[in-house]
Length: 286
Image (cartoon, rainbow, N blue to C red; front, side, top):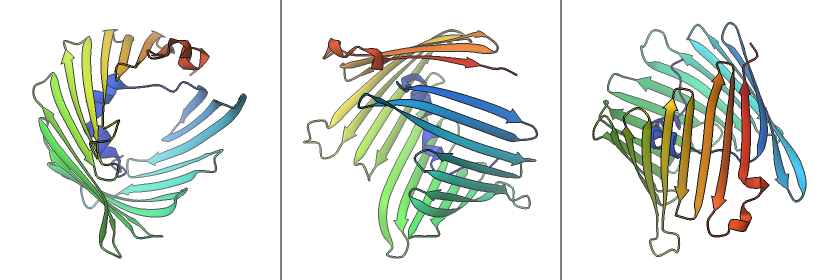
């Protein structure tokens, strides 16, 4: 399906570093996914969230349907009363052009979106039909170098609400640099991703907040990924030399896999408790 929403491109530009840094949710959750034919997917996620000696149950459900690679419908709702509905459609007469509607009740908005994918660039425009918000995205580049821009405008007052700039440069086949600047959060993020052979990958991400005289103006994350084979890998992430995340994943059989993760706060080792451990399983029952 060719239709993509406006926030897709920046996550894609920086996906190398994210594949190493990664992360996991320390709360317990159960996810059931069912694929129907033709083109129907249904996913239900239930999550237990500890809160003041109680367990709150959070449930999120989504539904998607794709018809002959021309149109797609996506809907989701959860127990926080957050409801979203998307409809996207390729325009057969104009190659690379897609249009769609995104509806959200929190925040309340209805977005009309247009995506045009060319050989050398991609452009996305989305307009809030219930307000003044206009988002314009533009990305261009080839395999080695690509840049992206995302603007948020108040089209009635013609004022710039926010601006994001991103760039990705593949220094070599194994070394990639990614940079992103966000004017809303006044934040600059630089990431370096290095892949050694087929088993090892490393990533360093440095975040700079403005104004620079703040106490936490600079933070960093370092990540290492070791893939023993296509079914087993280890991820280690270090944040500011104070917190370490360790995650082990194994696909034991084609239909059964497990994940174990833990976090350790080096400034206070007593914090290592039940909340810092996660264990997960994935079972394909079909």
